[in-house]
Amino acid sequence: MSFSRLRVIFPIGLFVALFLDGSLSNVFAGHLFSYPYASVLHLTLLWLVFAVFLDDHDALPVGIWATFVGLVFDWYYTGVFGVYMVGLPLIVYLCRQIKPWLDLNFLTLLMIYIINLTILEAFTYIWYTMGHVISSSLADFAVYTLGPTIAVNLAIFVILYYPMRRLYLSVI
Amino acid sequence: MQKFFSNRKLVIAIVIFIISFGLMSVSVAIRDKKSTPPLIQQFGNDVAGAVDRVIAWPVNGLQSATNSVSDLLNTYQENQKLKKQVDQLAQAKVSAQTTRAENKQLRKELKLNDSLSDYTTVTANVLTRTPSSWMNQLVISKGATAGVKKNMPVMSQSGLIGRVVEVNQTNSKVELISNTSSSANKFAIQITNSAGKTVNGIISGYDKSSNLLEMGSVTSNVKIKKGDKVVTSGLGGNTPKGLYVGKVSKVKQDDYGLASEVEITPAADLSDLTVVTVAEQ
Image (cartoon, rainbow over all chains, first blue to last red; front, side, top):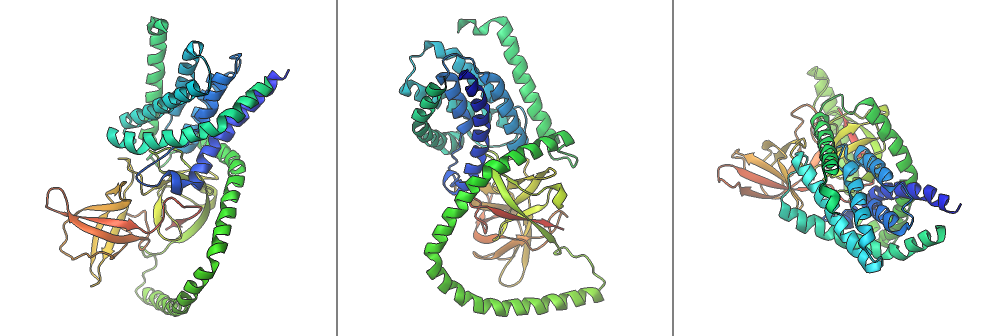
């Protein structure tokens, strides 16, 4: 009975995270996008990763929601379809694959999250480069985007880990 | 894990990647067309925009609250500084009014009705910014119903910030001038030096590391100095004449030594945008 509550909370939180990504990026643009550095907020990805790893029953349809939220991201934020729509479910799939091999705790999840951030950022970088949406060198990407992005998102992860775990433990 | 490369999964993976790449290529190919975005895409954007308004409202409220506090702390110094400026402004305003009236009269005599520098404006709130380092885009709260059209230039209070790239019914997307994408539209600009001579050109790029706009391939002999003002030239048809872009910060030879390249400090702060103005010719 209590489990169905998570089925409602999860998608709502997902979309709140999606739109918060954009609003917070705008409000804190002076800090996040202080040239040449660009740190990209990934609250949506964080929400998905928590859902995959903290939900012990694997009962949430995370993959489908990831595809949908990725579609909305492409639709509303960039206007270039097919990038986050594939990137986010890809992350969910990879997480599901490695989950059985892991002894889950704060540090392993932190490592997983770093890897996920790298994969998603690299995926979007490669995709946009191949589609001639952007022209940026690999060195610029690694130094100016990937580094700051990981730093900022890890800080957010550390702040949100325990509240989120409590949420999942209390709901299940 | 070792089953990953079994045939079925590999085929599915390849199909997904092809679909994804195809979708991206199509949307990149059609995004510059006049009819884009199609109705269904507009509808999706309008729905997303409506939801976003609900979530962005408290966040923006928080921002304006903190802004008011910091404003309050600076009030005294700012007031003193502004008092000095007000006296000069009153004079400038009167002289601008007379000049405008005279200009109108002279134009009437020449039967010159529409000039390049006429434009009306639409003011909009910034709803959100694309959370990506690749797309320097904003979503603003006015769309086709308010008269926004594709390719219109967008300004903040202090100067040009970008161009409308996608128009929906109730919101639209703005591409900032800091966008380095190869498909970005370039603005036609002109630099006027202290002797009153002008150099025309286009914004050819943006230097991320120094936050400067570049105007390349300048072959004119007109001397340009640091501090000369840069405005849009109105050539090319989309942009009205005389929108303030910034000031010249450096003039240097380009890589081949044949033409010079002008670096421009943009007047607008691209990282602090809450209200923008769309100029409509």
